[in-house]
Length: 269
Length: 261
Image 1 (cartoon, rainbow over the protein chains, first blue to last red):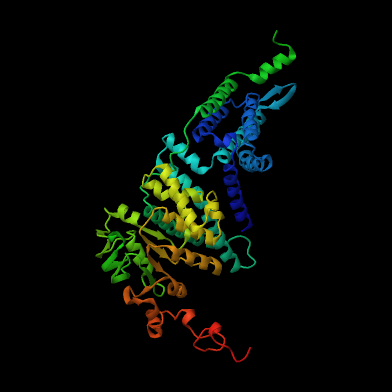
Image 2: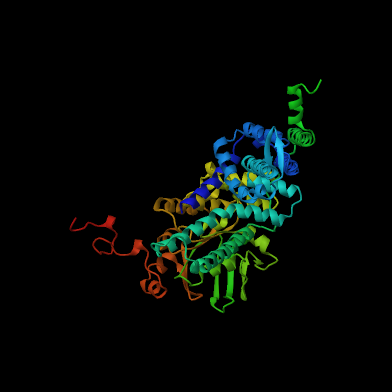
């Protein structure tokens, strides 16, 4: 149960952050969504052997973190939580790709370089997604997705999942408690009960879904998810978006660390 | 105003497993009337409410709200006039903040954002939770959730309020507050509950449902005091009408002195 309540606390934490009032929070959700998408596209498209090309992208999370006054420690903790999965995916690279390259006088296998690049890309992309959520909130994000023309079915699915994940977690917690109380001295759940527990949960989910849908219909729900007229897209939003997109394009196609290196070593005269 | 009137004629409904949940129920409610619907578990109360709101459609019989029959076609209009508060507020609070949730209904009726805001703030003010408007529903206490669910219905400005177990799961003080709130409403009210003391305080008329049929319909003071009827329908007298728990005398403790203290 403790990890379930912790998960709930984590979700609430992001919601609380989204309700702050800073420069970044006040921006139009569409501007933030577009910048984030541009950032993701730029980061993901960087060559897998090119680590130096990824470094300038750190400017984005660092600057937005500062502007949005996000707490660094809990956010970094959440980013690191995802990294083990990435280690699982990338850990075999050093074994498969043992081609040796020289890096500043040190011999390194190319596998390690790709592994490191995957690791950094993951950190950057997860940070961008978390920043978007922590500065926008799910409701406004959903309205931005609708403005982009994402079908209402997907958007609705997303927002309802987000809302009901807490109810589902509580439900799971109750089932697990009920099980544990009548199965003393057992670690975890016996595999024989997996089926019926999952079945129970799915039946309860159906029931819950039915009543939620009923409640929505009673208040005039017709399939369209309305979050109000929302704010107008103004020049500040456009400027924010344009500056970041320009920055990503420049960083992606111009080797800034390389140029800096040349300036320092006097390569450019 | 005729549209505050609610009329139910010979209602029949059976579930797909052929269980007959509602079996020929008829009654009508006048404007501003407060009616309690009571009955044992499985008597058909909840099914009746779902039929009234058009979530289920009857196999036989009809429901008239004002002069309009509840059919698939008239549902949007009917649901603007009748608001239902669910037993479990979690079923009803599906948006991420209280404000968004209360605004959900008015927005679906395509009101301007200014009008939506006015309605939301009035509704929140009415139930006394304006300070909670930016909170997430899962962060509220049971009483606050119930108040938010009521506000969500009030923002639609219905003429008729339907409530399923409004006092369930509330602590005594929250229950009392909620009852005060309901008492302040001038809407036509239909309240189902096992909390017979609440029905006794809030409703002037009571309908007793048993096995999908109406077992009794009349003034609350007479129906709830009828021990034989209550017993036959799987119910009991309200605590307020039961014997003194200390000495067993017919009057309540505050009205008489006990011989031993």
